[in-house]
Length: 129
Image (cartoon, rainbow, N blue to C red):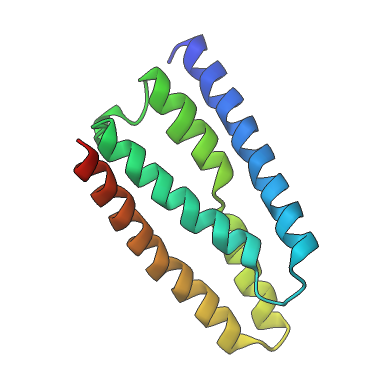
């Protein structure tokens, strides 16, 4: 691990986290429902982008760490932008509020649509090559 890797991952993660916060703030101002829409949108769009760039730039799992672009964008920005932990917490909160059906719809809907987003991102990148 080089110092430049730490710097790129940290800078990218900060940018991604800031983007996640701004999207959450914007969605929160426009949407007042109980469904965790911001986290849902962040995770689906982030999954699409990660899949797109991974295929478009031909990054395999062995190259996830070490390549400057990959370290900055995929490991930094997009990993900071997406948030599995917030999805798990949102699901838990919905269950605690007696909204188990909404919680399950959110949890399984996010997972299913993330697979669709990954497929679409990969397919789009493949077509562009």
